[in-house]
Figure (cartoon, helix red, strand yellow):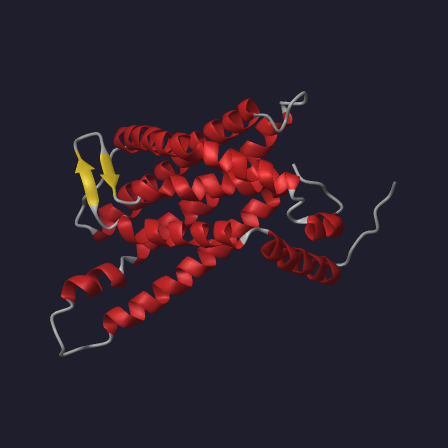
Length: 252
């Protein structure tokens, strides 16, 4: 059956309506936790927890698993496109908050010495740029890989094995590329220019990315049974029925 070809204006209007329905359909606690996780990663990354020759772990590792678990849940129920839209929304929110933080950091105050607070809130532009690019790229990789792996489980797509396989594989690979893209942009591209020649080698970037992704995966494994039960509950309760009716798709 031939589909009616939409003009660009019609396509934009349809996507906007679909996005509004999507954000109304995804349970608000998941969206809230996802946005908080993305923002918190940006702040916690300012503190390095472990640093050796081949490993560097920042505070963001303690919550980055939550963002990927939320994406896995939304991908499972609403599809990869929906999860990617949620990721874009969280990124825009994070950038807006970073702008507010920066404005606060440059406003002078004689109440106390806020130099350390200003340093954290002010941030570094190329770190924010690197983390934004890395997160969006890894979100797309995670969401569509999760979806494609799920398609391989034709007999029992809603089973526990299908859920943990698609979640664990996509999360590890997504986290790896998140870490790798960030490390390469920050420490191989920008740091040598703006941090007096400081840099990481490609081997260091890859090593840290693999180990970091493994540690982040462990944390998601601990909480994935909760995510699985939530997705089963969503399907049972027909969460997002209005969104699926508009898009012509069904719950994954």
